[in-house]
Every structure is written in structure tokens, then in C-alpha cells.
Image (cartoon, rainbow, N blue to C red; front, side, top):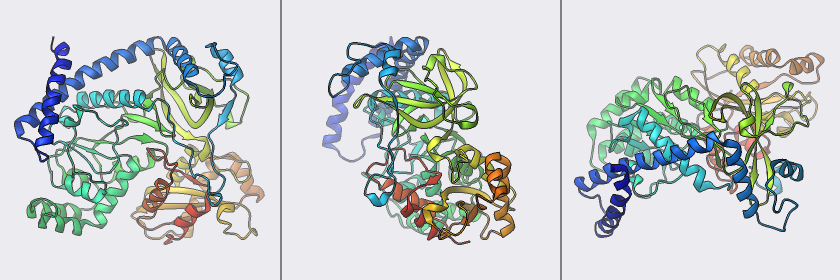
Length: 531
């Protein structure tokens, strides 16, 4: 009965809340805030239950749901009539629409975009479902995280794919009005020692914030003590100084002793930042991502906060999603795509989505491995991106292979902890002047190391040879030179992310590249090399 009355209660409270905000722009009385929060929690339960029922029905009949999504896609497609008009047969659809690659500009000097355009595939439907189900899953696993005043977001972007409509805004912690500065958001969070959940747009953004917290700790402590902004908090400033003196490991729990979970939105290239945060600043905390976003759109739902991170359900519906089998050895083939219900456990696939605006079947480049099933839909792990493979002589070292080799090499560098890295093929920087064999230029950000010896640099090349027989063969013949490793200073990767986000075509969340193919971005890091 309560679930049936909730929508009516929301309709009655909405005019009251709007009227109160118009008359009193400042914070409302505690009883009204408490009432709004209770209504928001009840509404979340009702809306999440409805979304869960819809998800259950669609995943039980994944093939039918994808056929319906295809039919809607064809009806809404703009442009002249196609041979598919009036047909919703999947085989005809695939035969008439060949696969296309996500567009990428060859060089930024041409004036073209640096990144593929953000996907506009039904952003409201998929992202709202991910947000509501993600909030419900978070509430079930960590009930205190949604209590009043228990959550703070320390980045201008939110990890929740869809902006929360009324009344669910009452579940979020209110930050400084109109704040877009991470420093102001961090100060607001520091004023509240009782936080249970810490949010950031992505793990890489949180890494930048917490690194900046260490670098600017004294300034932040002075601002807290002086009450800039808000009331002076000298005791809290002293706690901040004391927490920073003990180093980065476990810093978040020292600042917020009741903290339980860190919420970020997952996207390509975020795994390294998560690993660094788990090992240092956020040691001892759980991580949760409500969804996986690729090329600006939600493609995977996370429903299991209590499970190991990185498992996502590929839901049926819009956009039409297909899976292209990845051949053994990574060789390109003429394989045919399969639908979600046809995915095989243990198999690797590349995601293909249909853009309804131009009616094109686009290969996103994101590669997944099927780890299980939820009804008729696959549960996957994202393992890499085709566009982030290295190849100066056709060796084709994938993103996951290179990252694993780099991780093994860093593990052999005493005291080092990897924070970030990117690779550049030598032809981009032309560092050899054309006289040496092509090779990789690797830029790394490390914790605990200020200098890299030549012996340690060589360990990466040896690990790469162990990981890739093709690379080892080319190195043996001298066709490829040894990888060159450069240690960059603090803030270098933060500056790179700012440059990437400044692109008009940058999607959200911004996928962290592991291979740079644009000279200006590569030189940005080259100018910050310290060893």
C-alpha cells in the first residue's frame, strides 16, 4: 500500500518544496529537509523496484527486447529511406549495414577533433536506469551512505550518469552553490568528518584531487581555520595537518573515520587509478561504480557492490548492442557479430552499437570478456580498447598486455608505486630524428621514486618481451628499439587530463588514453619529464 501511495505523496510535496525554495533561497528548516530525505528514500525504493522489474523482464527475453529496440531504431532514423525500411529482421539489418570504425582525427594540427564524438544513444533511458539501480544497490550494500549529510562529491562531475531529478536530489549532499572548482568542493567535504561515501566523476579525477590535497594541504588547513568559506574550524584544520603528516596510505580514512565506500564512474583507462587509490589514499575502502561508460554513453550496469569490482551487465534495449568475437591472437577476421543472448562464457568480444541518428553500426573498440550470465544477458569485464594497442612494426601489443607488463616491471623497482602512464610511438615525437629503430616512449607517474636507474628502465623492455612473443622477435632482429621510460613530475597527468577535457568532442566520462597519437599532447608530458 505504501508503494502505491508514494507517487501521490510526491505530487503533493513537490509544490510545497518549490514554493519554499522560492520564498527562502537559503537552507530550509531541519524538519522539511528530513521530510524531503524520507520521501526521496521511499521514492528511490519505488522507482528502483520498477526499474528492476523492467530489467528482469527484458533480460529474460533479451532477443525479443533487442528486436524491439531495432524496430524503434529504424523508425526513428533520420535521412532518406533505406533498404531496411519496413524490415526488422536482424540478419537483413546486419547484411545491409556494414560495420564502421569510430572516427578519430589523425593529427590535432589538422584542426579536427582529438577524440571520437560522444555517443547520443538514448542518454536518458540508459543513464537514468543506471543511476536509479546503482543508488538502490549502494543503499542495500551501504545503507548509511545515503543518510543525510553522509555523501560528498569532490569533483565538478558526478559519478551518477543521469542528473538526479526531484525528489532524489534530497539524497545528495548539497555543496557550495554553483561550485565547479574541485578545491571548493574538497574544502566542503573536509568540513564534514562524518562522511560515509566519497564521490568523484572518475577514479582518475579523484586521484588528481587527493594528490592535490597533499600538495596544498597547508593552504587547505589555513582556509579551514580561517573559515574561508563558512565558520572557522581550527580543530578540523589541526586534524587535517595531523592526517597529512602520516603520509598518503589510508589518508581518506584518517580524514573521514566513518567512510565506507568510494563511488566513481568506470570508463576506459581507469583501472590504474583505482589500483593506486586502493593501495594508498583510499586503502581499506570499498569502491563502487554504478555503470561503465564508453564513448560517452552507458553500456554496462553494475548491480553488485558486494562483488569484486569490474563486473557489468550488458542490458538489452537501446542502443542495439552486438558483440564481435575477438579472434585468438588478436588477428582481424571476417567474423559475424552475435546478439547478447548468444554470448559464450570465457569468450572475448568487441562492442558494436548502432547509432540511430545516422543508422550506422559502429565498433566502439572496447573489448570485454564474458564472465557469466544474468538471465539471457552476459555479465562481462572490460579488458581493453583496440584503439589503445601499440604497433610500430605490426606487433600489436594490446592495452591489457602492456599494462600487465608495466605493472610487473614497476613491481621490480624498489619502493615504486605506479600512479599513471601513457605510451607514445617514437614516430609521433620523432625523438630519434629518424636515425634509430622505432620504439616506444613510455611516460610514468610514480610514488616513492624520484629517479630511475638505467637498470630499472631496462626491466620494462624485458617484461614486454616476456609478454609479447612478437615484440621479442622484433627486438631480437633489431627491427624495434628498446622502450624508453621517462618519469614525469607531479601534476603532469592532471594537466594532460585538463587538455583532453578541453576538447569540444571530449565525452563524459573522459576515457583515459594509454596511447597518445597527437604530438601536442605527447609534448605536454615530454616537457614535464624529471628523470
